[in-house]
Length: 231
Image (cartoon, rainbow, N blue to C red; front, side, top):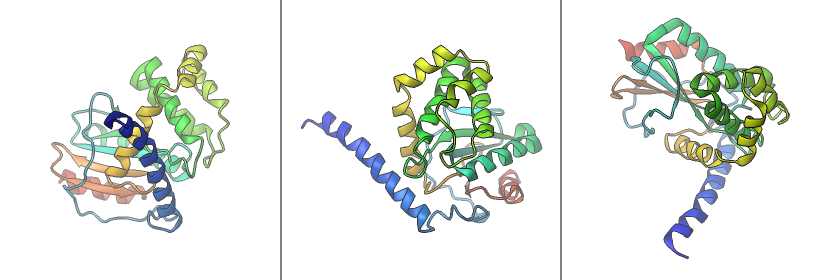
């Protein structure tokens, strides 16, 4: 087996193993997903290995903001649904000082429908740009009751609800063109330290300081960590 074929064979295996590890960590309490108020404190950590923010990232707010919050999320995770609302309030509170970066971390072992939902958001982005992506994911979180409760037949309905063409959306989603993109995001999430969802990293402008938000922490705890980096 040549090197390229071997790598192509090993990548999906690594994703499966990572998913099993993550699910086990959550189940046995390592990720403390059952306690969304868990905090790692306000100490900053410059050693967090996170992929740089690029033009391909989905950003809500100014890309020149003093603080960027990179969230790794699973659309069928109930804590992610809750944290989505918290992040909206954070942006309203801090204005142009804080921006939100959304990245995919569907945990298939727990939520088998989440990976395809993640792909659906990318199809929304393809068809309507960054604003369509955010409109779609807002509507998806509004629609689902979490824990694989969203019927896949709702995905094109959500697309139409946010102004996208149903035929083009279905063609995109059925093609599987964004499967690899979502899988890469999963790998990057694990590399950055994610063991459950939501998992977020606060990054100061320039990247000198970073802090972790573990789970759907209460808004006051999130604000305290932001304020520590803004000071």
